[in-house]
View 1: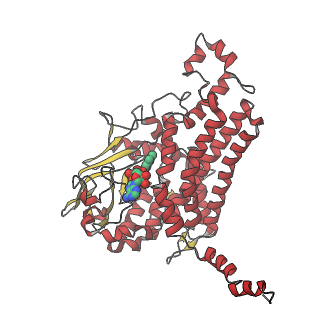
View 2: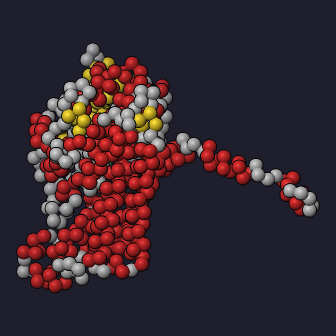
Length: 492
Ligand SMILES: Cc1cc2nc3c(=O)[nH]c(=O)nc-3n(C[C@H](O)[C@H](O)[C@H](O)COP(=O)(O)OP(=O)(O)OC[C@H]3O[C@@H](n4cnc5c(N)ncnc54)[C@H](O)[C@@H]3O)c2cc1C
């Protein structure tokens, strides 16, 4: 098969539609339903993009098994050029969605690249992981992932939840594989995915009593017994009034597993509580952090453009604090760029010669992005203020008897009312709407709890040898005796 086109992606998704619920309605084909079809089309556009003549050289590479062109998201990098190729691939897709789709499939593509490169971690399942990676790559499949457990009782470990199968766990082993039951959250893009990847991601360490929940696997999203319960959709609205929500609602869903069969060849960790406690050894953040930083970069750049143009329109760009606010956003852009480049420049090969970007600067961006983004949204509110609501409710106002009022009062110094409404509705969708609120929540939490993430990566796992060396250099350069000698007028 190799790299798919948009049409091939949509046709497969339509044929293998997962069981998707929005409220009490079962969506039989997400490629056709008004709430979900627009985002499916945006995702299809990304598949088409990879075949464009001017980008094929970095979007695709020959599969080592079939020789067919496959997506660069699955390229195991061995040289700095390979890493640059990966960067360009991620950036093209992120720019095409303005950084507004966090779980385009190159996120999991990056994750699986790390899993394959670190396949030894999986012990006797290592070959299953390698085979699965090759299968996904050669069929260009779209993956979602769901790791967190249902927030039923966070004070208790998995085995002590009110129902033993609240958290996803193994019911029994059969000749064909594992039967699993329970729920996982949040499968962003779940309704649009061909496959779902699952493993435990918890603030708690697993114990022997939690063994049945210590599982990692991947299965098709249309597996019998698997269903996705979606949050409120933003898609299905009109493009002028909700220019972002109407197109880029990637959807978040709870994945419910109702005695689902996981075939043995898809079981990567089986009830191994010790192994899930060490899953960070895979170092998948080196690849996913590369993708998420690049995606954040696109989003910040897009927002900086919006802030710059919008404030020019109404001439608030004259004011120093408005310039300072926009300067804050561009500062984040440059820091993000620098971290991406640093991660590539300081990449290190593993024992098989596969280059892992340096995860340190990427963690720094994760640990900043989750705080920067709410601030950026606040900055949009501060610089645009009432302008965010100074547009007619719906596009049809422009074709109504009040058009004259709108043209007169809702114009801007530098733009007609129509141009102003077009731009400020984008700003509204980011700074005010439900879609914008969900984005803030996403940036805060998509990589886990912000506080624990920073404690773990910037403190517990941080290498303090250089900071401590500097401190020791100073402390060892003088002594109490030196000071006493000085006070006594002696030689220091
Ligand atoms: C928009 C969005 C999209 C997402 N997409 C995905 C996805 O695609 N795939 C995926 O797997 N996950 C996804 N997630 C889930 C994400 O990984 C979790 O939201 C994140 O890990 C935080 O977990 P939680 O939401 O269960 O919060 P909780 O763990 O319930 O935390 C709530 C609060 O309680 C505190 N707390 C909880 N437990 C403890 C503890 N043991 N000790 C001290 N304090 C504690 C936390 O610090 C936090 O302040 C998404 C989340 C959002 C919001």
